[in-house]
Image 1 (spheres, one colour):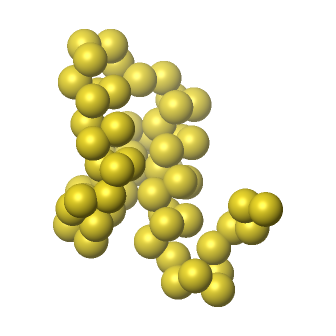
Image 2 (cartoon, rainbow, N blue to C red; image 1 turned 30 degrees about the horizontal axis):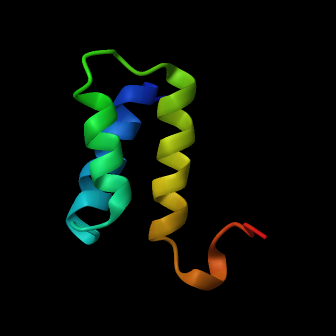
Length: 64
């Protein structure tokens, strides 16, 4: 099983290549570059968020 950081990194690279101007890219970049290493929970939450956004709209989690 991959570590939370490796899974996040791979997902982030894919997300960044598909949506280079998405606000989440800048938000995540800012959080990572703030100097504090993110927790495993934060990594998992944001990995799931990016994966959900990359899914076709009919497969995305219901947000409402």
